[in-house]
Length: 258
Image (tube, rainbow, N blue to C red; front, side, top):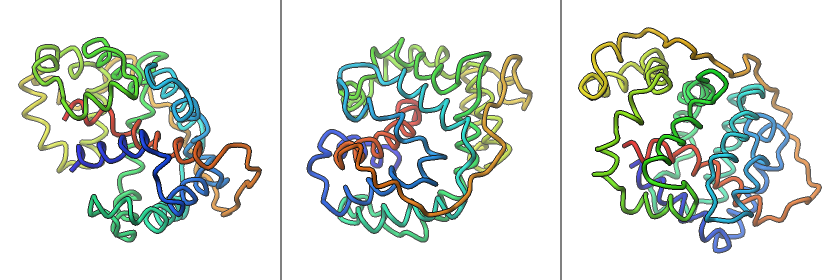
């Protein structure tokens, strides 16, 4: 399922100009909504949406994560509004995945958003852990440009990743991400324990926080004022690309390591 959603997201980005007008409008409204923009930092992804598809996305993702982690967390109301906009406006695009139930999706996103945010805001020293992990992956498979990510998602370099797996997964960052999942979603962590024990040793799943790992997520929560900035500073196509880029960013690490 994760791979399917990722491929849909990547395909949507590459052919963003073919999105329905309703979907483009929905994505634009999210990027221009004050509440969503303040906690999701979509404008930081503009260079992915409008830049060179052969350039690595890591610097842009790192900048985006810095903004997301420094901003107040999204409220449940903001999350519900974002999901409703997407499921309503992009119903045609979502129908191919079978994930167009707004209520069910809202519940899942509200449940897992805090955990994902904590994992995405971990730092090893001065380096964001997602950034570090992407850099480790890039060191194995080559530049993580949009063009290459599409190719990697379609044809994962399974053998190459397997040969270098410990360099990617057995890090302090991944250990603490596992700890976060263990604390928040024990059932999911349990299914990963044996794999990590085999790859990284039993101490990897002992629950201790590695030295140098810190949490950078803001502990405040945003407000829900449901206001839009209709300045029109960016085109609807750019806004659609920015929003879809966010999904690409969120799913890239999990897809390559799945």
